[in-house]
Length: 372
Ligand SMILES: *Cc1c(COP(=O)(O)O)cnc(C)c1O
Image (tube, rainbow, N blue to C red; front, side, top):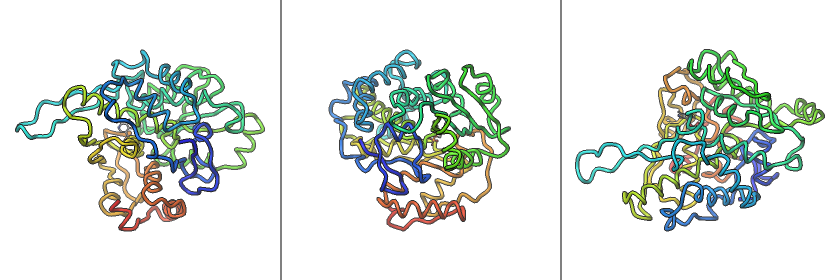
């Protein structure tokens, strides 16, 4: 997909390098491509492919202004020797359920990376993708990554970007709402280009503040004059999203190799969901030809997405619960905006929803949209 544009307006389009370097569209929307699904991954040959080969194919389709050599170097640097398993994201079979026809259940282990967060899978890749962009792809010589975290993203992003040339990173986390381990992981990060700030509020406050920083035109001008452009390491950055599409295909390849399925059989994925990045990557995989039955959106007590997917009304104005899964304690789930764009096909409609969300804390989609 060579051209990306905002979920809130189609007039300005850009390459995937520009989308990755700038992180968020100038109108506050997220970068999407209308070419999603025009190229299909060959399922029949998946079983013979390694994680690296699958990544090469999938990323090549999603980021087609990167050369094959660039993609291959990014994949190697991100995953060769940095993850505990050769498979990068190994599947582990759960004890067989009783009854011969009971569906088989596997767990995909995404925690084998350097910070033990599943987010390493994407955040080991994003800095490499960003390093292959240059000032001509977006404004200035230096990039400052500004990121909000509910706990895990912060450390994984700090580890990915630490001492990356031409890049600085600042992480904002809700003080008192991340675990002690996460707090220590972040505050002890080494590197000359890293900064960590606790804020008063919850993750949504941190994420909204980061979005306001991005939307501040005057700040952007001042930074540009100083030779710096802001970007994001949150899953609003398309370079954070696309590496996750790979492991849905890799899971399928492992099931084929294990003889658990045959090519073409549908597989269902149940995905613990917060900012809707992981499950959206599954939706992208499905659009790219992966035989996905259902994608099950799993929520914790902050079940804003479960409510939305059952009623069609998104209500961010509700009680916020602090849970034992802080990475899912999110009431404004950013990547849902991308799904709304792909399902409605209307930038104007999405812009309307986001305006209503900002103004009233709520919006309702049409019944056709909910059904889709
Ligand atoms: C980030 C995270 C999630 C939520 O993933 P999203 O892509 O934000 O939906 C769920 N569980 C864990 C452990 C996480 O780190």
